[in-house]
Length: 130
Image 1: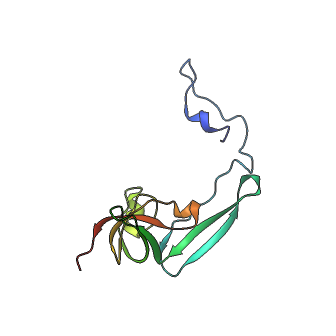
Image 2: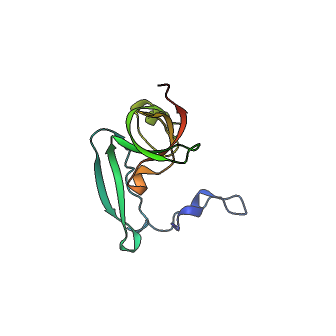
Image 3: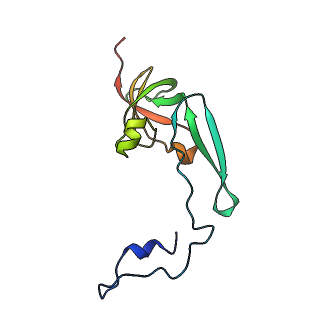
């Protein structure tokens, strides 16, 4: 957690908290992956403690789980229906957690975080009529 996290709050007296130093390298955030539809492409990034984070930049397939049967299948993403995270993401078709996507199996909701997990998982909302 960044030491700058409490700066958005105010002091007990009501006064503003002042920035007392610049952010250190490990406190600085990175750019969002902003996963979109396309040929599968991933990027690895070094994280705190030397750990690696895989970011999905573009993806064409999704692992869709049917809650009724409990089975998981690989399906192709047709389009991004809705993204409530950001109006601009909704317009551009960016895939984030909670985004509704149309797949070859039907309508699904993304449960994974593509920018952090390195994969796209979803749960089926409505099945497509055969």
